[in-house]
Length: 189
Image (cartoon, rainbow, N blue to C red; front, side):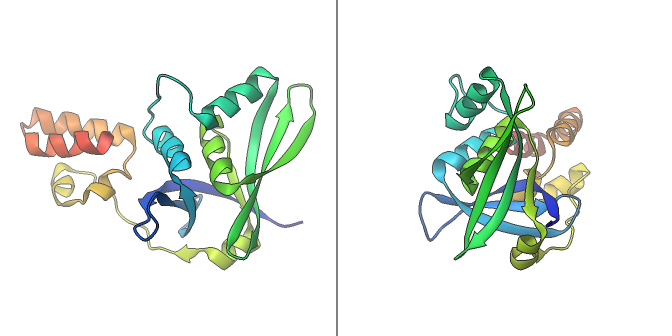
């Protein structure tokens, strides 16, 4: 049996060559190996909203599917990226019923990850696939002080969790460093 490695969603990058597509960056949980998957605009929107802890007044498709599963007595237990064929990732949804039943459903990786984000369930990849596609990145030190925020790029600030951003924002306001406060507020959007 193949080992499964847990993944975390690190972020999204606009794909300049192909308009309307994004690179979904996934990283080994607790590790330094990353890779990206090309996804469409609707999946990127769903993932971005969840990453930023925002909700729209009406549910998007991935939120709707998760709501349907829950209403029917099922929940998404995990997502598994199980194959890579001709540079295309294959994913499956592992669904369990409240009655103990279970099933596996094939899905596009972009939809599977967006649904996992809505269901707040883990995402895994088979170890041999991660070994093929991942690149090791050196850990990046995130800004922790206002002086570090001043020198940080906007993309770096978006990697901070909401609690850290709120703490730094409050500190910037208290110290009357309003330009930094605005920079932090923009990172929270």
